[in-house]
Length: 137
Image 1 (tube, rainbow, N blue to C red):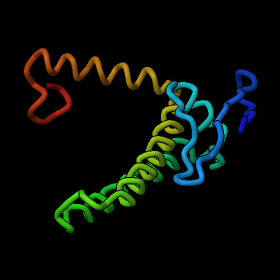
Image 2 (image 1 turned 120 degrees about the horizontal axis):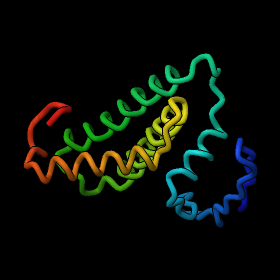
Image 3 (image 1 turned 45 degrees about the vertical axis):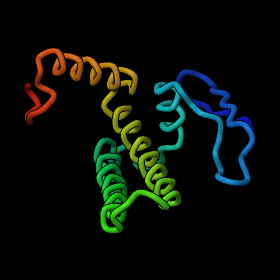
């Protein structure tokens, strides 16, 4: 299946491949900036709620992830939780959508966020400050 999406820079053709009957999986998208463009095309919240709407959505979805992980802790094992793992993965995808449109609302590309985060972590590793707390370590 191919989806054609119009966005500010032109038109995007995204080949999602055939849907699997078993798990509704599509071919993988590996480019963060491409994902961000597609996500933006599905953002239908009022523009005057930019930044606010995706932030609230992100906190809600992160709570759903936490709730599902809590159930794994409650039951004492991750074994035999295949459906729960699928649900957590889906909720993480929802978090990614909100992160993507929030980043777009503030004018930052997802790839820049990812690269900057890896640089920050590499610096912390080099300084021996990965353990600990605080943003300025």
